[in-house]
Length: 154
Image 1 (cartoon, rainbow, N blue to C red):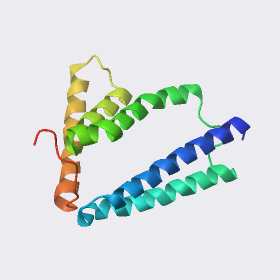
Image 2: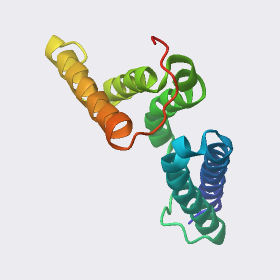
Image 3: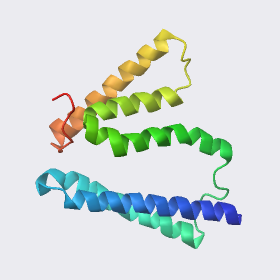
Image 4: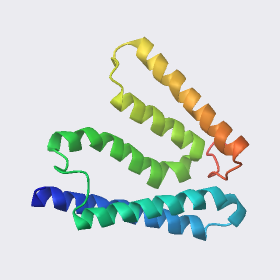
């Protein structure tokens, strides 16, 4: 492993740990406590895994040996930007399900290998996005009864 790839692993590990720990802290300061039980359980697991990832990066025991090339970073960047917009702007502003629909459709459209010039591929993206959101709604709202941010259109 080169020094640069080791440095890249450390930066990524620390960034992931910061996100994991901040999500965990945020989930524990929200009220009402009953509504945040599921997010708290998930955030504790996410925080533990993210700290473990950072520790492996610092120790040099990370399985990623070469880091990311410029091409790989360029491939990841659009999805990362969409995710950051979703997390920091859209979810609270538009509501969980509306923002999730837009984010899923955007990321799916960015990374879908089907032609962007064919109407059929756009129809497929729309149908799969609707199915994804329907499953999310059924899982979170009906099965787990998890509190989600209020919707913009309500």
